[in-house]
Image 1 (cartoon, one colour):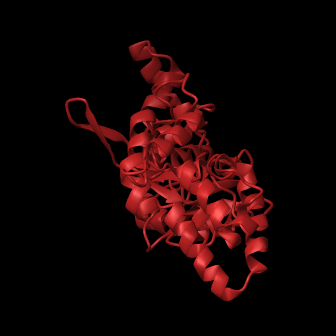
Image 2: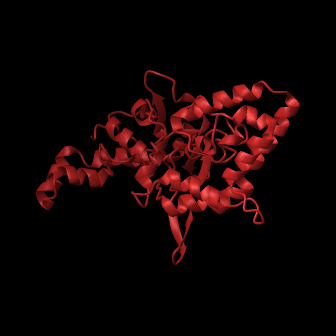
Image 3: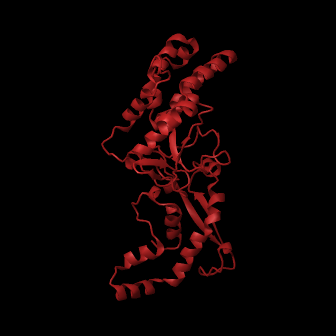
Length: 319
């Protein structure tokens, strides 16, 4: 729902984040005896396993781990095509080797990846739903823990070779990353929030609907209103909205919209101008404070429900 630009959330803006990420993966050894790194094992597997070589010979470890967001789909198409050419028996052995190599759960997740993201980023809200905070907090002095989960946008069960790919990891809330919501749904034809082509905010808007008995925004109860995400001129984000159950989940927060409507009735322009005359505070500042308005160029990922508030503010003519 909100755009993810990793660099905007870095604690150290000078950090070469992808270079450091790959280095962190390679620091974690598979075997304490021989000190084999991820890079070492990848090269060994390519050299000694025929099917792995056939499928991955054109890719270095860096090509896969640091693949750019907008190239993820291309690399999947190429690798899946090569896999389709081998026998079912060899496929089974190949997938086992790949899972053993790009070992997310039992190797890299807890030891490397989650600590890496916690240490280097300050995220605020879930990029999928913009409802829940995904912040870090200080568990004890100098020791931080995170409330975010890292979702594999392209399911790691289906595409195990993308399990460690940096741009396939989307910081999200526990709900969006749960089996009840996204689960292992194949998102291969859906635009990811960290893509330059992700234009959800521009193309999809929350729309306000009033009960037929409501006139001139005279709403008696939140049950008299309804809200729904509507995409303009395309169905590019239809699956995204359905997978994350955004319409269903946001209906539980109609009280936010109801309060905005109540305030719009209590504070018409004439009242806001009176407050300006009384307090000396500029009209626009008073309006922003009362309605919790979102600035035009404000990063929507910084505050929960910011997209809802911004869209409904436009619906109510507040901006």
